[in-house]
Image 1 (cartoon, rainbow, N blue to C red):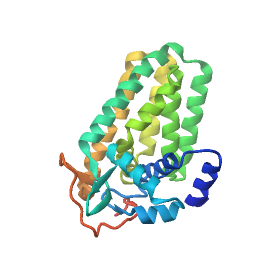
Image 2: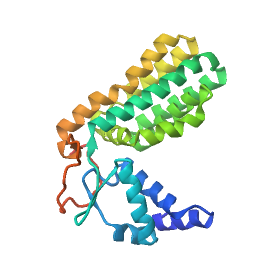
Image 3: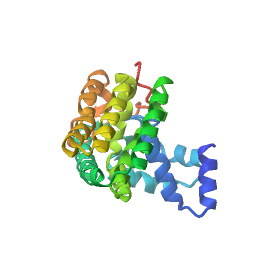
Image 4: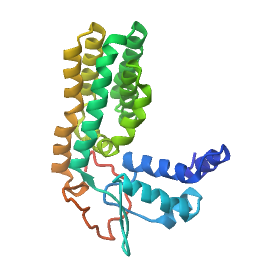
Length: 252
């Protein structure tokens, strides 16, 4: 379904236009359809999505508040480059919440929970066999959300998801470069095994090691594509010629 058709269908069901535009743009940024450093146009986005400029402008302001967009008066709007401090902050939030949930999950996990987690591992292995990185990324999200749900805190997952947008951009970049889906699946399996055994300390350690893998991945990505990153406290000032492009960076 085309973006405009999807928006119109959702609006017909009573969804708020600004919220819908924000969700679409945020998904494109996190999914790297809109690459770090690329320019975006309110007019082009409004035309593509079949809405007025107002919800697009309001959505871009919200995205700027999230650190995903940089707005320069008299110059334009650009997708923010990845800042390592933002990745580190997102990782801190994610690790704190997921590991806290895991400690409770050890006391509550049932045979059905374990079976559902193992079913997700099987689906991840299938995605790996077919080199389906997009499918694997979604299954990875499903796995961590389900793991949190075992603790009885499923409602906390949207908080984690909201906080880790910068982290997710780095993770999406890392998959085609590091080719480590099988490693991640093995780490997932270790967490499930230890959860089933009720070994809290080792399960906690396994999950923390798994979540921190992103830091070494970021170093590899930055070495290969430094133009996607910024160390500055203030965003790097872009050039207008940083055209909108798709971030197919795996073999670049």
